[in-house]
Image (cartoon, each protein chain N blue to C red):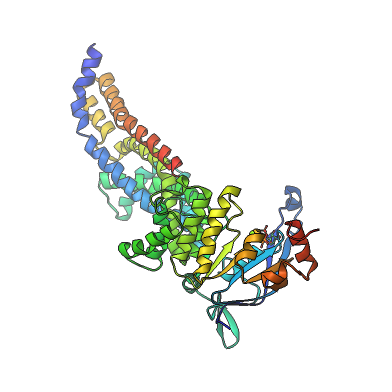
Length: 217
Length: 277
Ligand SMILES: Nc1ncnc2c1ncn2[C@@H]1O[C@H](COP(=O)(O)OP(=O)(O)OP(=O)(O)O)[C@@H](O)[C@H]1O
Ligand SMILES: [Mg+2]
């Protein structure tokens, strides 16, 4: 019983880190969505150099651990004079990383839009770029909602990695508490439960989004 | 003679497809083989304002390709296509053909309505949204202006009560009628139909043909590729018969359907039970 009481007791101290997690996740997701879409467009573009740059970016990001990328941004960039505060560095690292994965979601969603949709738009006088923006991308967005939601949940959990670059998110807050009180079990259990409380409802939302995307097809 | 809306002059089109090579022949570095199919072998066609032309022909004779070339969904290899006096796909400068910009092609396409066999409605938009979309996106009309055009067009095709339905909640015949309304609402100089009823259940064919007939009777210039012989006979001013990439015979339905000259026409008509075989 003590264990449960202790866990409840440390909860409020951890809750103060929730706004930081929200800030990280929303900021990084916004960056990842915009950049991911641009990378996807570059990958399907007819301009070879754009395709090359996008593919290179993808390989680098997917071939290195997110943890290393965060460390690189926070500890290595200052040596070339680029100093970034912990939270913006976390947003940047998470955003750049997830952009690569989201670009694959966008790319396959764009390619999955039926050719007939494109032909209909062209036949009605849409230019190729207007066809892309007004017909193809809106439809691919519907298809992408589920996967984007899943990546968002994964990203929330990955915010824990920013603890190594001095962001006082949930894990870092737990570490600090632990070093002061040594209630290791209660503190880290509370931290794990807190992540669950955030991600479980979100995964329900994703299921609903996926169902909606399927039925509109 | 009424003014010429479509002029197709000696059009050639070849599809080049790379044949799939086996892994072994790729490893052995054998050169890949290009498969060339000449689908249009010199086609000439004139369509005048207000005319209804029906194109008949067996499967693979090049009917769809010809229609698709007219609004540049396919590019031609040789010849000229003019719609309303505008050369399609190219600019002509001092006798030389220069590929035109995509925006120019798009502009010319607004003047050509195209109805597909498989409807191709925008799946994320309602019936009304489908008809309004090009009016807003291409013609840059306001929402109110677009609606004021879209609603009567949907009523004209008999879908005044289905305007808020998404394509997934429409029957094939209803979808095709929305597609017709969407193309027609742009007020094109000519409407092209590529087998508009071939993808429909038999009991839904009639409602779509009725709408096409209604549009024809309003004096719309149109070209219809169809396998519906009776319908072609009923509404067309001129029948064009294609075979293996050329037009083998053309003329008024009264003549084509009673005294066809070309063996391919006779074969086609007897196969559909119009002529005794
Ligand atoms: N994109 C393409 N690539 C290669 N070959 C093609 C392509 N489109 C059509 N063809 C070929 O061109 C020929 C003519 O096709 P087309 O679709 O114009 O015929 P059609 O008269 O419309 O026939 P149907 O009555 O079956 O619709 C066919 O042999 C077809 O296989
Ligand atoms: Mg065809």
